[in-house]
Image (cartoon, rainbow, N blue to C red; front, top):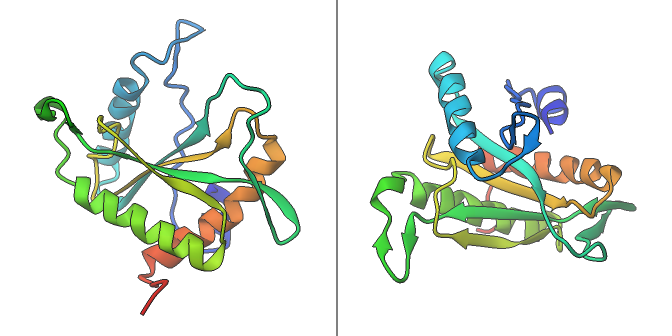
Length: 180
């Protein structure tokens, strides 16, 4: 995604490849968002002009037969899911310690991406998933958590998904609408 956004569309991209779910050499996802938030804050402090924050990874499943694939321009590509944190639960209401001043902006961005996806790449986007927590979506008004495929997709399917994803992001950031 970084390569396409920089080389094809001309965006300046900082790609943080830190493994935030590894602690002392062992997989530990219990504080991954806490650690990634610390890393993102540092990057944003050093680069205050950053407008968009994207957390891109794959979904994880135990079922080895579950794959999210579509065909785009003759290539199998991993389907993409847009993930949003609401900082809210039905049972308890707002989660104050996870306040996200950009929740509505993030949701609007996901909706615009969904509309662009349906207009240009039907079937490419799985859905917009909403969960109670905020993840790292409170850093900028244009923040996205994107899950490209799953651990059951091939690396090539993941790579093939990046071209349409980059195109949709470019359209979104340029203000293109999928409707009149």
